[in-house]
Length: 134
Image (cartoon, rainbow, N blue to C red; front, top):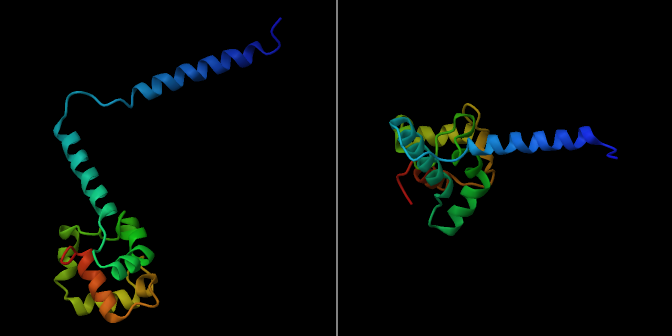
């Protein structure tokens, strides 16, 4: 005599649904233009996440203050190394970008959460983020 026959049926049903759902996740052999665009965007996102300054001190500041938003494009932040997103900002000039960084702009808090950064640190970080320096 089974004590919980409905539990076993529910468990079997959920297992079956899970297998069906997971089979939908397998990649297809064909690759359409939409998939190519999605793959390209995915590669660019991965590049923003793995991109780091070569200077150890700058890398430390970047990880502590910039990486969280600029590697993922959080809250509309331009992605690290994405020259297309940074181009209109660079047209304003480095000194205006420095002023915006220090006072905060849009969702970015004042000083971009780097309270110990000097103006030179900010300039170096801005140039790195914009893809103008490594």
